[in-house]
Amino acid sequence: MKFDHEKLDVYRIAIEMTAWVFGLSRTLSDLNRHTKDQMIRASQSVPLNIAEGNGKRSEADRRRFFEIARGSALECAAVMDILLACKTISEEQASHCKQLLLRIVSMLTRMIDGSSVREDEVDYDYAHEHEY
Image (cartoon, rainbow, N blue to C red; front, side):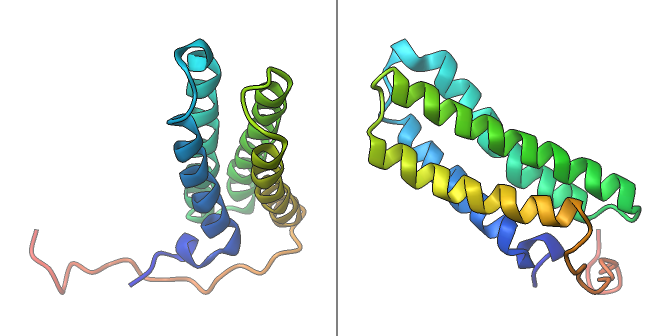
């Protein structure tokens, strides 16, 4: 069983990017702790807001959450620039992450503009199958 947001390519790429950021964060020194914390928060915000937005019934609410996710992805790109400028990460590391982020931002931009296809409605009422 999958939730609707798990079917979205943008969500899957956002999860991939977040996992990559976690791996990168393990290599950063204490000198970079504030940037590392910001990078982790921003990277987590992307898939979390995609999932929440995709579950909203009104298009305005959906777009608002997708805009927040897009903003967080752009924030992650800026963090990569900062880490690269401070010679904390390599050009290859920054480039890899920014390629993922560019894909995420591009997809979210299309979703915000309304040019994406919404998944079929799913009934999440499974009370008849499980006791609580």
